[in-house]
Length: 131
Length: 196
Image (cartoon, rainbow over all chains, first blue to last red; front, side, top):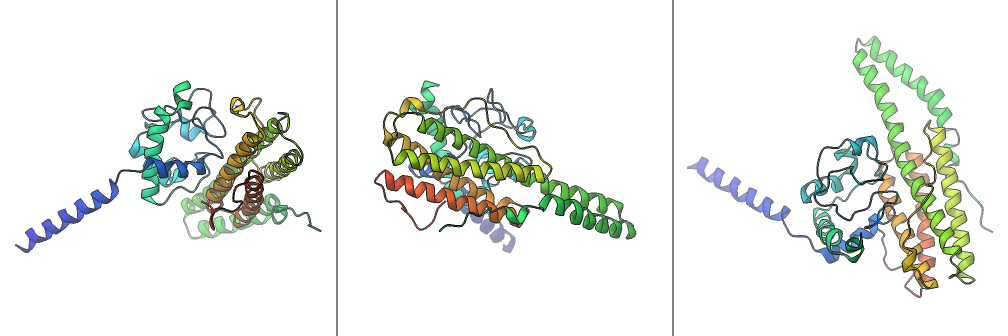
């Protein structure tokens, strides 16, 4: 009985934790957060960092004409909400040797907002439609 | 009178310090580790010191790349014919300060034994969207705002505390650029108590 209660409590805790990490991001707030990225990135063209149009579903380190760090060029993952969340939380820990010298975005809500905006902007924005 | 300072002055001998004192300390630590019968620990210690420097060099080179792009961007703005005095003078002054940042970053990378990033042969800017003085100033303000965020994100990553301090000094300068550009655009120059 006690064991059953413990399992039920654990399951409830897990579902609460899952709910808190799966809050959908707000792209409007994400747009403001993207301002932090604009020292090095643009949607439609390569700068100090690679362009973001077409980001979702693209293999990491694969924008043509961009000079990646060896670490990113050899990365073996594809950009999606999950990999972006992990990378944006701590770029240097996720891809050791990356030249993205940025501490990361600690707040999961801010990451979700930014990812929601990136999902829209990198496919639907006029800048990305032109390229 | 504003005194001209070099935020990296404390780092003037960092390369030498790491070479002389750093390697001395490394040897001592290695010797201690070897005496303790743990050569693997000694090797790991040496590897860690090298990794710290490489990490700092990577961060400095990314900042240098952004500074070189800013120099080019201000060059495009100043040469566009869209900027009138005193905005033109501001753009040239800010470009000069980005050149100072780039020079000192490149020197520091060399002192740490790295190879400084070089300016690209060609930069892409949204020149088709720059039709008025306000467009140019707005573009520059966006770059400066981004630069503030970039330095803010880089400061906690430096392994060498003096580098973090020097990067914060550049951050302060770029925040002033951003505020002045906002003022020139008729916007609130300091829209918030904190930057992100």
